[in-house]
Amino acid sequence: MMRKEKPIRIGVVANIDKTGSIPFLHEIISLSKQYSKTSLFLESKSAALLQQTGHPLSKLAKTCDLILVAGGDGSLLGVARSVYPEQTPILGINLGRLGFLTSVRKENLAKAFDKIIRGKMVHSPRTLLEVYLQKKDQYLGPALNDVVLVRGESSRLVRLRVTRNQTLVTEYRSDGLIIATPTGSTAYSLSAGGPIITPDTNIIALTPICPHTLTNRSLLMSTEGKLLVDVVSPSAPVTIQVDGAIQAHLKSGEGIRIQKGKKPILLAYLEGYDFFEILREKLKWSGTSI
Image (cartoon, rainbow, N blue to C red):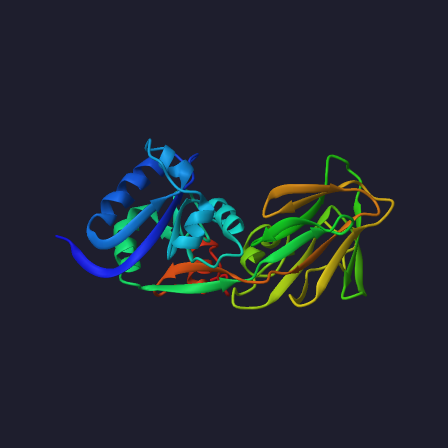
């Protein structure tokens, strides 16, 4: 029986390397047929899994009301980076294991889809960081999770000088440095000893990786202003990773500029989303050892 609901255009992106992608696509197409005035638009590579013709992700970002991303957190991060600065809400379907950002389990897809069609969702604006090479003013892309500066194959420590709004913050001697957004605070930064930051704050965390000085701990600061990170001589070569993707290599005397993104990315969650519940469930976080 067809159900009459408010018209909604849904873009669908599946991680083609995940074994569950094809069953997911078949199920989401079948579910969409149960609702009137609901249109699905498959991303090109996802459509190719079904021998169909799809649409570029850039088109989905401009024309759809919502983008569903099936895969893991990495899949969602990749889509978020690709659609920026468009603010089409993105909702993750977890086909993997942890799925901290991809909140809907694949076995709950039918119930989740019904809530999506009925508008039972909330939008969570997430701060991004824009990253530039200082020397060439070359844009390396947006970071929804983190910007990581890390030594390469050398065993030598890196020396990184951090300046904010032309004021020296500190100089790190370590294996690297993580600059994490609130979204990325539960990723690599957390593993390196950084704090958990609630997603509704305009704060970034600077966390050194294996610092040479015991007093070097995570530093929280506002996202406002410009942050410069320079490689100080002598230092091992430094690799720049933006949301896990290698973007550039720096040598002594070179650096990057980081600033708050012009617009936030909108992550979509089903009604009833609770950040702290996710922490307790997926990170086994608790305020007590009992």
